[in-house]
Amino acid sequence: MAIQRGVSLYSYQQAQFFKELDLHAQIREVGRNLGGADGIELVDEMSLRYPDPGDDFRRQWCEWMETYGTRPVAMDVGMDVLQFRDHVMTVEECADRLRHDISLAKSLGFTNVRVLSVVPIEVLVSALPLAETLDIRLGKEIHQPMTLEGREVGEILDVVERTGTRHLGIVPDLGIFQFRASEVQLAWFERRGARREACEASVELALRIRRGEAPFDLVDMARHTAGNLRSEFNRFLTKGTGEAVFAEAFEGVKRFTDERVEGPKEAEYRVVAEALTLSRTSADTLRELAPHVTHVHGKFNHMSPVPDRPGEYQEIAIDYEAAIGALKDGGFDGYVNSEYEGQRYSQDRGREDLMDEVDQVRRHQEMLRRLLAA
Image (cartoon, rainbow, N blue to C red; front, top):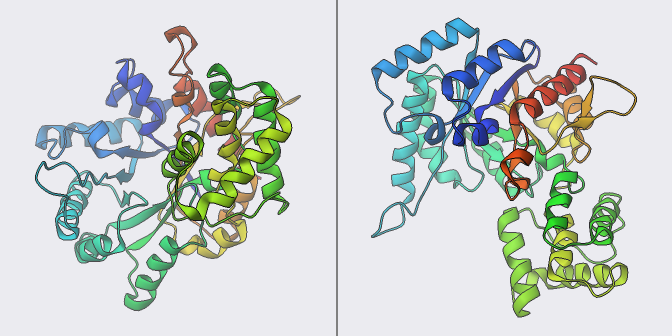
């Protein structure tokens, strides 16, 4: 089977919030307007009446799939360990929740369940027997700033090697191939007071790091989420404190900014520090891991026209050519699902200036179709 195209309905979160597209309309958009894309991925608590949508919904869901020629590919599950007032959920409580979600996914025809990158391996191992019984593949998301060479992937491979299971793998989020801040992210920083020279410094630093020419010592950021890195940098910037392991890199960002921006403000240090949140993972590793990929999150923040090529679009901050090429060369035969997240960088603006999610996903699908056919 060739690589297939689909859409994570997470891409339409803004349209859903404004009641412009309900679940039915989102599925119709995928089935009718994306030139052969048929895969549906959704976040359970966003799209369903969780924890049990009911039998009437299941019947309606199956009718939609048949009507629009779409296919349930992946159900994304959360793990809110702080939902109880008196305790943090234990590993086994999380595994029980995951077992419930596996059964829910099966009842709706999904073949993959994605868990968040921070879910402990013990939770997956505990729920794995049910996944095997129901023929559901569990995939752990590998998300920026994690890398495919990191501990999270190693833990998955260890379990696969030890047990021989075919029902555990990884979900690469192609944001791990982002090599610079996107233009919409830089514009967001500019509206918060960052000058153009600071944005240019952010891109310069990211590209230097990509070439192996970082002007200071880097530490392994892959064990931390991008949100935690930003929080740590903010603490360093405002209070002069933080984890010692980050001190050299944070000081390096500050020096780099001082050399390029006159009298830099906090927003300008922060935009330059975005260069530290990038994964710098290897396409060669993705090629080797292709047999362990359950499905792929086609992350993107902004699709812009390709100069002098009408009707073609590109994501200038993510190396899609390398990622798609590695999946093809590695023999991956599952789904790449568009996952648009750029709307978060325009939600400080007026309603008339918000990004059009439908158009952005259509543009992304044009690029995927072209790269897969190359």
